Image (cartoon, rainbow, N blue to C red):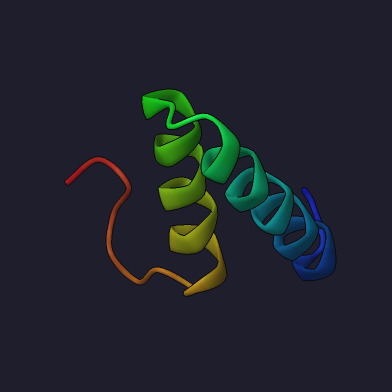
Length: 46
């Protein structure tokens, strides 16, 4: 399990990568990390 700081660092890294190459995979990873940082209350599989 990553710490919140590690997740934020990865999120920042991916956002920089997304600016240089508009990749669907990068966008999905960003959404997943933002979902984790926002402390989801529902099921991941909804």
